[in-house]
Image (cartoon, rainbow, N blue to C red):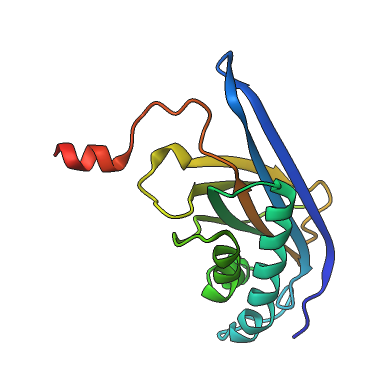
Length: 188
């Protein structure tokens, strides 16, 4: 099974002011999105998705991880992943790509992360948005890095496509003030 990429899109967001207060250093978030053909769209139910996993995961995990890191242009502190499947596919087709260590490990290794990548997946019409969850790359109990970014590509996914996504952030949320889960667990 061949990976057929229609296009790759990268977005970079920089936040300078939050809540009326300037940040000491802007928060930068970068996403890399690949629009790929869904080989199972409009086909009868497939019990075994291992061919999709074997053919797509490692290629897309390495490519999109690298694209997101390059777009960010600085050290990654938080990351995440997502997939949006067109209406002629199943959510499981998107999940098969992003919920494999073959997809996540190349991205984790690139940024020296150890945390599992938080994820989002859904089915949607062309132009649908998806909210991407991010967490700290080495410690999921650091709440300041739990954040969400909404992304969309106006002309994707077509009904027979999947948008596969890696997201990377330079820091946690602007002006975090709720403390760490580590602190809360020690207080109990």
